[in-house]
Length: 111
Length: 113
Image 1 (cartoon, each protein chain N blue to C red):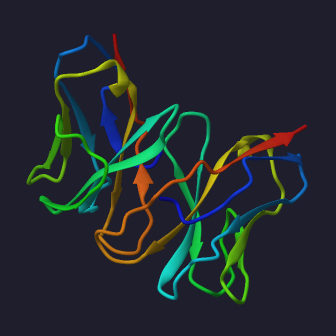
Image 2: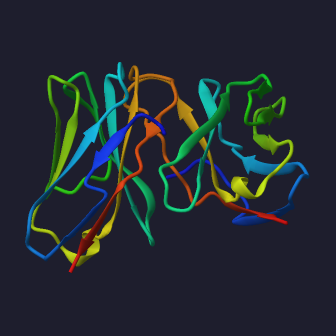
């Protein structure tokens, strides 16, 4: 079972920041937080991941609370092409620990 | 383009039949993962191979089997197909078997009629 809780859907205006929350209150110390997205019926695309520090890459920023029980994915300037289902996943590193995808958040970026 | 190639893109077959889905991982990646996505179940992990050996098993039916060949490509075999097997099947690859990101292919849409 997925160990995360995400809102089923969100809207965001084009050009504004999209902030997608994820609750993972039962996360253990060795579990990472991953974010993937799936545009329409394409294969999921990796966005970012982190353990406890905030992370930033060319796609997004990941903010993890100090107690690690929740996180926020930030798309700084959302475009129409960011409309997708966003999945927050917690996972222990190492083989045999595979990615369990929940229902995710359907983000709609509106013009 | 993720670098992961899946063939065929679409497959239409009848109940009771057997099909084979093929996946070529990104150059240099040693792990291959198979996922099934249906409308009511979401993305479900089926099985993982690393360098030719099975590493992890998820919700894979006994009618389904997979293997990874010496050239690292993988095949997912689905037999005695049922209507409920209609789904998108994704393959993903990664370099190792630990904590790194997965790269997904564009999927095979299987329709069982």
